[in-house]
Length: 72
Image: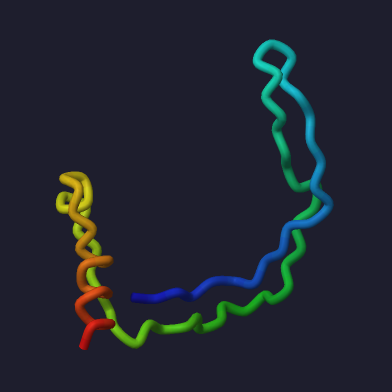
């Protein structure tokens, strides 16, 4: 699993309200690139593969594996 990304920060939040639904929408007015380079992210000590079909059926494989590891 790779957690590589560019360092980016979003700043200067603003908001507006949708007239009909009255929902408040927030957004960033500025994007700052802190680094032009791709940096290596943190790698997990234990890689647990995600299984979407199990999760869809109500089974969280990742959580079950984590609980098993923590009990050891």
